[in-house]
Length: 95
Image (cartoon, rainbow, N blue to C red; front, side):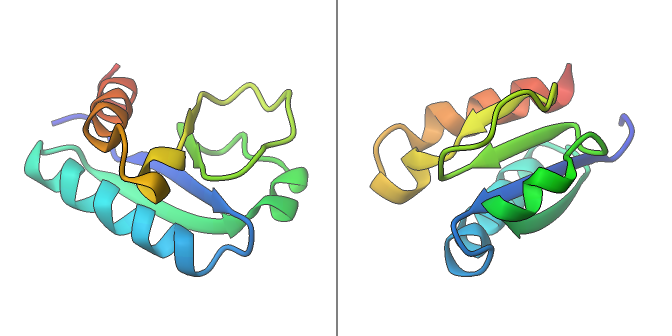
């Protein structure tokens, strides 16, 4: 097993939506033996920087230029493409 990966979940307010997304990602990673430390925040807080994270999953538009890989989290809200998004997250965390 590799090192624990840091994931930041970003939504508009950093509360409800990000909590649902965080739990789905935790469950997915636990089933695959991927150790994750997941934090949640609102998009405005990302202006302080996200460099300490291995991956950002965002359900809203993110300011550009962070240099951290970002996955579109909208499928978690729409229900369309969730499995593919989880697979992308898993691949990025295992690389």
